[in-house]
Length: 321
Image 1 (cartoon, rainbow, N blue to C red):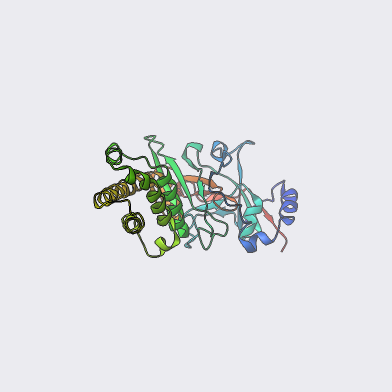
Image 2 (image 1 turned 90 degrees about the vertical axis):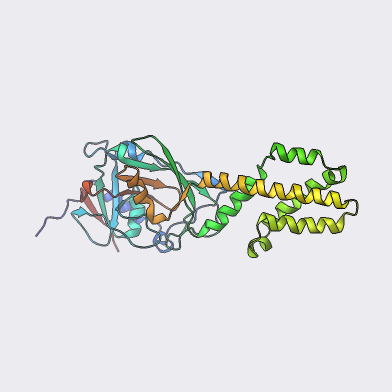
């Protein structure tokens, strides 16, 4: 009969800490984080120490399971809230306890330079990003290729994709700067046209952000046409020539704005991926593991390189039912 791992010296302290932990965490999938418009999560420097396979300074990691194991293997959880193939670990034994009452203690053998530190920029979303990950928020992250040093940008938006993009487009429209050609068109317009343009454009952008526009799938060209028609009916000062100028200017603004917002939004979000593609993206850039925190309750250290697996268990703490 195989010998079970010895219980770690800190078992009593660990058992006490986890027993005191709020049992509701497991039922809710974690506490609801306060939502912010956009913030960067700052994970602790796990990669700086997690690579040391032995020694007192090695970072201890935990894995919760429903059974006791001498070695831990990687697998593909196969559900929408997973991070892809790998062995899932955490720096927090309380978080590990949400996955099972057997808390396995290990040390990662992955060298620090092969651990991708994912620092997510979090976006506000009224709902969970993933149905199976309560409290999760959409995010963008950057990852540098260790060989070339080139930085790549990825976004995980999940069920919040439309809400995030709508908010970002609105912010980018506010930052829009007219081209020199457009400024020339405005400078050459009549005083009546110049007086109306600012109000017309504000009306157009408000309409573009309005719920009705989203429901009916209007783009900026549709909105401009509608606002122009309203202006033509409302302002008797505008001659036919003025109306032609207004239409020309508003149309050009809409074209420039759509192009500018599209480019900048694409640059900000980078490549859009699903949450369960995180492991494969990190592997593609030459890493063997990654550490992420801030986008959902708890932190996760995932080893997906089979050269470092299976992982020997140093000790197991069994929690009371």
